[in-house]
Structures are given as C-alpha cells and as structure tokens.
Length: 149
Image (cartoon, rainbow, N blue to C red; front, side):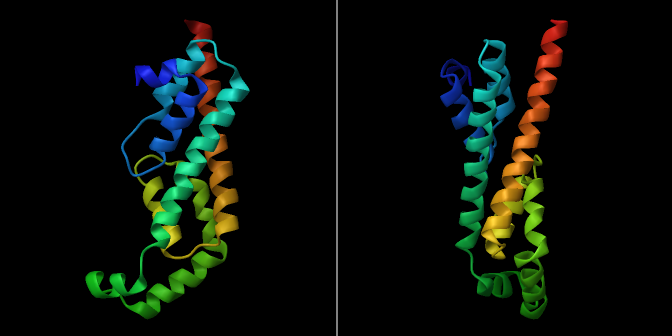
C-alpha cells in the first residue's frame, strides 16, 4: 500500500478501483496517506470516486454474465419468484446501487443488480452518488483528524 500512496492520485484511483471489486482491499488507507502527504482535496475526491465507481460497475457487469437457469438449477429457487424480484429491480430496485459503498455487502449488491438486470442508468447514477458521498464524508473526517495532529 505504501507504493500506492507514493503514486499519489493514480494510486488513489487504483486502490479505489480494487476496493470496489470482489478483492479485499482498503482504499481509505491509501487515500488518507495521500491526503496526509498534502495532495489536493478535489483531485483526491475525483480519483477515489471515479476509481471506486468504475470498480463497482465492473462488478455490475460481472453479474450480467450470470444466467437465470443457474439460479434455478443450483440454488433450486422458484423462477417465478425470481422474475418478480427481477422486475422490481429493473424499476425502483435499481436505486439500491446507492448502498454499494457499504463494506462487506456492497460488492454483492453490485453483482446482484447486474445479475438481475437492474436499470444500468439508475444503477450508475445511484452508485456514483453513494460512492461520492462516502469519500466526501471520509475526507472530511481525515481533515478533522489532521487538525488534532
């Protein structure tokens, strides 16, 4: 992670992208290190948000590779109930992408939204907003902590 901190904004982008995939990675450590090194607030915000957003959308598209037949065959779920859920996800359910920033479950939400064919535009906008707010809150926290150090 130290190397990514040395890479500055590119390191923040890469760390944020990796953190949004199914790989266990913490972008906050890299972002905090880069901020402590004196990097620009808005450039860090853009790098972190874009990297995390693109990583999240890669999970969404990974989910789109799945097939309903697999769920029916391997998990023995009723296809009619699954189609009801899919129809809900295609509409209002796509805003759940806002919560993709949540640790632990966010990646699974993104993959599920892709698998259930959530509306790509609603997913993208909701996901982007959630991730931007997440990094804004984190960066404000880091700046408050810096005042005490």
